[in-house]
Length: 139
Image (cartoon, rainbow, N blue to C red):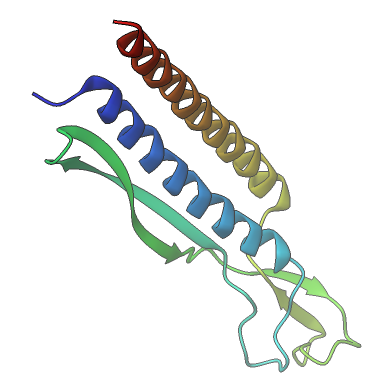
């Protein structure tokens, strides 16, 4: 039988890693939301997506979350009329990234809260382990 506190630390640790990766992907999307291609025939930045998978850690006996895939959103690019842009086509339209800032900010907030929740679990588990060690010292 595995230790429940050790399993708790492993689970929250995997959650921290997953949300950290999610925050990185969201940050890349936000940073590139206004970038366009250099030429009319090239594509601008494509929004990245991230998906997770549940894995069983046999050493701890706990289900952990892992990054399954970092993919690319295939939704269409937005077109903006900007005839003076070097990336404009013959009609004056520029392809802009398929990044929705509002959606990314919502995802950022959710990922941040999930990260904080996992951090709090790790902190509480660490405190419980410390208390257990202190109790054992007194015996």
